[in-house]
Image (cartoon, rainbow, N blue to C red; front, side, top):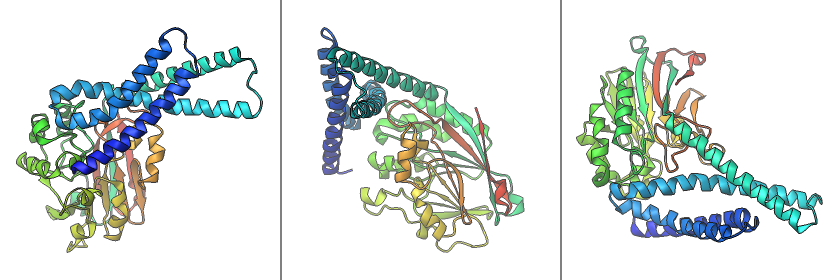
Length: 395
């Protein structure tokens, strides 16, 4: 991203975080009128965090990983807790307003203060419980999701073809080489015919993270390993990462298509946001599908589910995507539907299927509230019966 875009993004994010922290302070600290120095201490702490969070995003972009990893853990954990402090405080504020409108609040100031303190304690306790639940879900690791997709044009000899999808690993400040080594071992144990990585592999530059992604060399699949860019590659230097992944033996598909042993065609497109990030980049499903043999199925790799409209228009049989993390943390699973047609799982519209992974890692807060990470095992089945489409979860 250009320096001007970074500056604008930092300014906007800073303003948002200052307002959120002020609101949390007003409802959880000021209104509770905490005794002794507690109110002042918490007020100063919230002020420091309000400034630290956006500044850390800039620092993590330039500092070496050994320096920015501890900072990232602090900031990202607080982001998760702060999110739920804000949302629960907002819910409490709504309840307080309704009680006032119906005349249910006591007139006595001391009783009102006691209610405010109980509300603040409930908000803090609820945020802590949700954060702990999210952290436990991350610590539990990823599930294996076995997805069966019937494709009418798939040759009978190819029925049972195995594709392993990795996506949204987000190797970076809080996810390192050891995690990726485990992912590679698990992927290989599934004996894939093909491995696909559908973007957002990294959060950082090649200089920062090259040693951490080295385990990708060990991925084994009869028909190769393929990659398409996600939006985070464009935050991290997409051209450099494309070159580096190719050096690791990974085929990067950029609005292009290859034949997989004549059984089906595999296409891959740049991320939906790519055209705004770099010249000569940008999602182009029509270009990737142009000239294909219509007698063969077409499988499309696209980081964002919103490529689905173009995929249907191009006659794609199956789109494999990520990006949304299944929402990662409630309520983003609902909010994501404002931007994307699908958030997770297997769907079919007309003759086109789409599978959206919840992601293999996580972004930001090391928390998953209402979701789990996954490695996806897609089995292609030669059939025109859509009832054979299914998802089975293991682990």
